[in-house]
Image: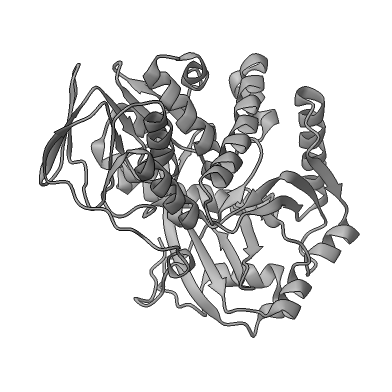
Length: 426
């Protein structure tokens, strides 16, 4: 885990829209549904449910968007982190078609929410999958052909080396696949917009209200430090931040640290020289780098990290990765740097389902949470209403149990990241 200077902070927090501020829960109350976690999934479920007429209470241990939803790269990518060819190997031909359909539906839900509720979140179009090696180009071509032939997807465009280098400066990448239906956004402002929409529709959101204990049964009780909620159904939507509950599904995920920096403003001219495209970029390394240009001409650059030592804003592993891609930015100052946890599954497909008959959960998006949370929240809302068909597709994914002890997790993660760095290098 990175150790940062005390004055380092999240660029998204620094540029967040106005927060209304939500009270903490005190006393006892009842509702149809309680949602634990005020991020993409939790707020999406709350919004869908209140629009269906349910009474909903949202409990957030910190503040809206505190977890991965307010810290991530904000990238919108078609499909799943595993890739659709690998997803077929996991779930089979019939269910992989359903998973792809869910991903396509997720785009419609995401973009509809942004437009319907007038969410100001710097929505940008396009994502480039950048290949650092010719062997990666081969995989991208195969993935493109698979999606076009299997799902009739027409949103991919091939970008050769020369065209890519006219769009993105530097010589690190040898080509790319452009997903024209992908894109990027300001993730915290999108989360705050979801909260506004859900609250305006009737959801009760409580911040600084950690769910401390779950009383399972036909009527579910959720105890907090100063209150209690009794409900018919419960949705656990805390992703990598819910492992302290130690319930069955948390065994399917392992939290991974990702770190992001934001440069000082580059100015319009220099920003255009670095990225002559409004699309975001993610490379095809397993230990991937991802980046985009912000409206105020800052480069936001992220990735995973293996460093133990204390790092500064100007001397850290993510900046070193940035300079591999953009060596011409050696003179540029870093203004922000932050980190956070996201949950990964063994299959790199989401883990979504239910416990008993009235506790639902969703986590393990493995880096694809911006998009997939939109459809998963819709699927969970339908399931609570009684329509289980789409939820059953996710329930058929068999994600393996992963080590839960930090004494095992931390060395295992570092070994896995190191091994994948070696594979990437080879």
